[in-house]
Length: 222
Image 1 (tube, helix red, strand yellow):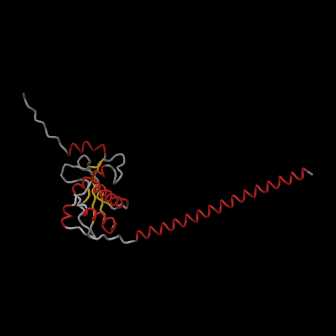
Image 2 (image 1 turned 90 degrees about the vertical axis):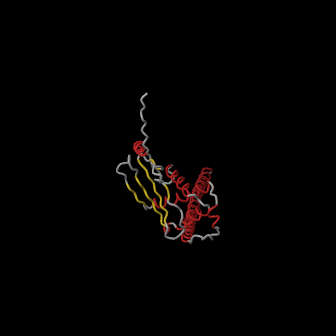
């Protein structure tokens, strides 16, 4: 009799254990299903917000600058840093889309390769407007900006250099071989142009020797 009771208890415990296991899996499946539904709904909301932000017209800022402030405002180092960041984003946007001209050098020891990226206003109107407004509001010195942007390019911060490229920032001509065009137009239809001159690392010393020739030292007879 006790054996029978013991058997009934064992069977009952077994059935109760299986019941708990089944209940756990049902709850787990329902929880995962709810999480997936929540994630799908959240992704849908995010996509809708992105579409709204993309389609929304850029906010127009009313210009209240005086002619004096256009000429006398003093840009800070952080102003140049921020503007270089804006320009970097613009150049990268066009480069990712393969919107550039590439002229390959026939002899890198004499002439570097040439890359030209052009961004038209219509391709990034909000960013173009932001760049122009900031440059005008801060009275940015274009020569300083071009130099800082060229240094940014040479550090691989605009386009990755890889392991065998050197960007040329001075070619002994007085004109920047790497830089950005003057930011002087906020008109629709305007463009911003970027140029990058570069060569393979192993040709740099030969190019440098040909580009910056050392004056000959006259021998004197004692």
